[in-house]
Image 1: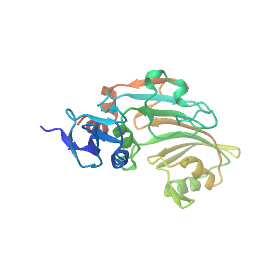
Image 2 (image 1 turned 45 degrees about the vertical axis):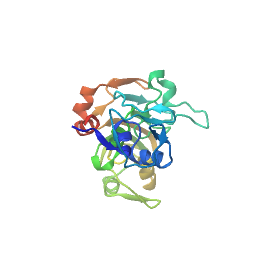
Image 3 (image 1 turned 90 degrees about the vertical axis):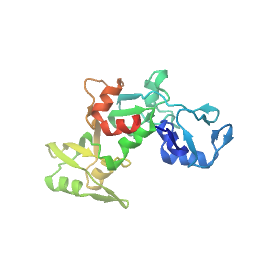
Image 4 (image 1 turned 120 degrees about the vertical axis):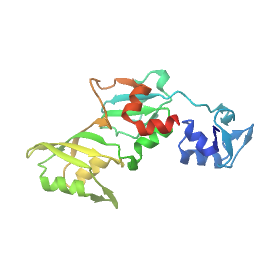
Length: 245
């Protein structure tokens, strides 16, 4: 069976870039085939025989690597920070420095963060169309009512953007504060904080406890574990089959 596909798809299959990123790299002349820049995204290439370079780096399929990391509060997910705040990479060993975060958790949010070397996997996991559920434990100021929960599930407009929870459960509610379990399948920027603020409830604590079937288990803040292929195939079979095809 032929392994020849279009160049932009090859970059994605090799886990080097998403298709959108690949198109940009190619159109900018940054990808070299046979030592010459190639600006044709549709150029047919062989995944096993064509030597594809980016900035003198030979692009080869890397063994899939995924980390499940318990991000502490007061840590950012960017590689660098202009305020010199600590990043998740400052807590990871050297061999994991090239991994990228699957989505983001903001500075004040703790909990489950996935990192990988495969852009195809990260694109699949963050695509709202795939309906991967993320569950958060949320503490907000004030008394949250069932009517408020209904608004969050139906959708709330904020700065022209519709924010919506797939599910919200009240664990405890008092005049001082309320404890919620919020489920999302689409990770818009600071979605939970914005949604709660727009209905008059400031978030004081936010923690992601699961991503799809994956949970933090007995990890402590700052700890991580490697997810091996067998586990990934079990928890995300659709994504795994795409990566391995």
